[in-house]
Image (cartoon, rainbow, N blue to C red; front, side, top):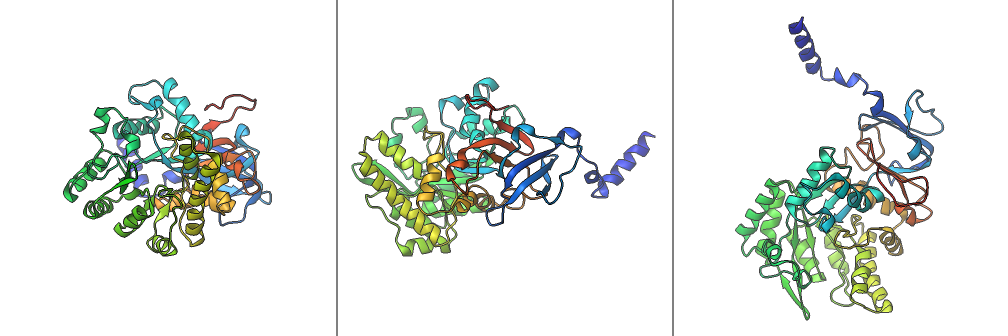
Length: 430
């Protein structure tokens, strides 16, 4: 009898579909309802909609014209809002002391800062653009094992800097940390660093192609090193992200064939991107993470007068406007982790002020990053068969972009990672 059961099991697996006909346990199948559902930025919204989640994926989607299935558990705490696909923050850092020693710290220590920085604001995927690689990997592994509730983490490992080119604003780091920051002098050295980074779990590379040294000096990565880094990263199947610093750095990055610029630029004063440069960026499929909120944050720390600060941020807004109007792909990101302000509301407001529509902002959070990271067939849309990565907002961002930060619930792979308490108080995760 035991042999017969084994034969049946093997035949069932070979039939490619036997297991798929079995419904998941009832606990893994549930219903979410909402006043409005944004399937994707380019599609009409569905009013009085519902989403059926099964086994971590979206089983079905419907509106008032199609009755939802009966006898299925309803997610009452998360229902009644505006539903979208899960958000991606494409520029974060896990450098805050709250995340240090992630391999050995307790859940009670790590969960609150992790929730407050990520899932509290709807982020089901984040890109770590430069932290301690071993610590980020430990954090990612604990999330994937279910020890912590958090987003999927993509990482670029350790950033590469120009030879003798650590930026002035990092020089206060402990000497032991500074010695670990890669500053390759040759193309071969850069390639070796990147190979080791990928062996330790990186999915991309971040290059500082230009770094401010203070008193107006900019140190630049050699073209040979930049090209080698791009070539090796592409060979390993990853993306190249670049900190450009100034328009010359943007031009060098585009010429080298990078994938993503992690900032707009505010150096030198009155910094602009020419129409020719923007055209090259779009033609070569370079994406941009604006980080507009960061500039005001940094300038405020430097005690720059408000009217001067606003003018500098406006320069960055004009760069984003020119790039977006030319058809460039925009990815949402805030530099949170380096930036202590966790709330992304201002970033949404500044992007809208630069001329992006609510649906363009939604694309920067969902479909655009999914496409950029070759995941468009499984996330970024609320569509049957896709991962059940969902955000429930307590208002419609089409009428006010601040609503993108008004998160009621965050769901990743069918699991509720954040549920806002019904009463006033500090947000917490379940």
